[in-house]
Length: 83
Image (cartoon, rainbow, N blue to C red; front, top):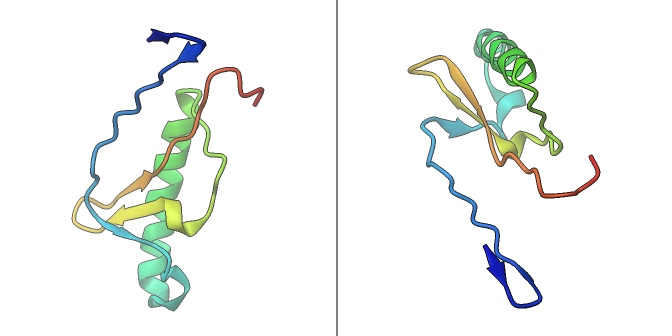
């Protein structure tokens, strides 16, 4: 949206189910392996659509055990950021 001397960028986010994985290394090995398998599926899907994740910290990853699905947040892509 044009504004005087610049622009406004709106970011729409959805609250995702699941929980943060900051405690990943404290979880039982069998839970970690299940989470890793789900991550592989999710990251391969992300890459297949041309997506990327630049900030790979555990604080940006959510896992929903109920659906066995990963969510990568936030997806940071800005206009003309050169990456």
